[in-house]
Length: 418
Image (tube, rainbow, N blue to C red; front, side, top):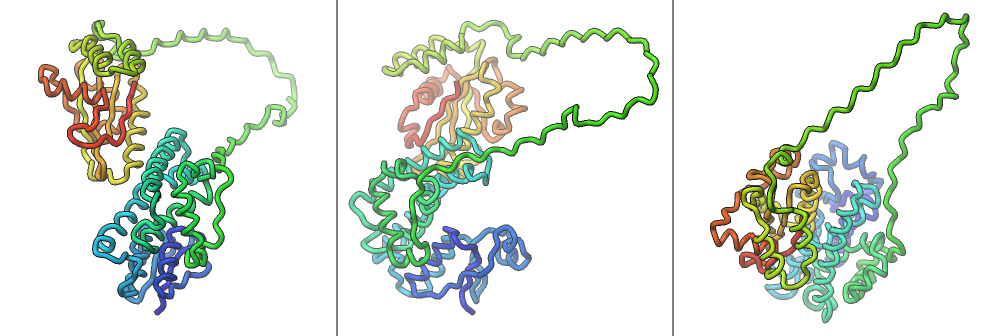
């Protein structure tokens, strides 16, 4: 039985296995007449991958799914395959390292930039800005690595080059214009070198760079209500007797909107907007000006400070997704902007990343309406700050200041809610 790859044409994840097969001298047949959304929903396909995701490789020993696993399997059919590198550290670490980099740093950034613009997932300007920032950060690191290298690992094409090039493919071809990629000249050189290798070109064909960024898909307009003049009225058969006209009832006065319980608290000497202004306007000597100013303003009777720690940090394996998680949380906290100030830190130089936060709330408890309305709140452990404890007080200052390193670890990102 030949190896059969179930996928439609043009799938960059299928390219990985097909290019690996060309380098390995392995015959892989691409299934014919594959229709995405139809073929992958059939009972036969779902037996191979219950999630219905593509590609899937059908082998004599059973099916294999996940594109990187398929590419590894194909490459390992050739004993001593140079696609895995030429030394122990290359074979056991460096090739895998760059495959993981391609999967966790490059692929999500391209996807979250491109797919919303194609209408596959809802578009959000905030999400796009985060995706671009994350992608540029990844490409910057890659650009530095490639400054003196032709290939990611060693002196010839490895599986890492195949996976990374395929993960960059839709970016270069559909959304990353020359004005974007020119910031990363070594990445540009590397990508065009790879896609013009004979075994790449045989699978990918001629690759051309996107000339423009796809426009955001517009939502379909709601159907218009029929106009009154289009509705035919039957002529009255006889004049109707006039009825007594009742005096219209007076409109009830609008009921006053109930006050937020936090507005009913005794006045505080701390003016939250004054603190937010000081924070935003302090550009130098932050510790001496802004941090000192915070503690001078802070009113422990009118406000309370809270640390929050994410409960599921093991999930935070992709830097961009982790930062986007924080961005969504802060968006949903908008309902309490009048009563709160917050700092959220993404900590760690490698996954899993840790999410830690500091929040200043009006009152002595985390506001109930926030706990009820913002589902993210239950994803964190909340601990009230004891300002009489000098260590906790210093931790508050460090978090406001975005101190790096933070508690001995690199600070990947810091966001402020104000």
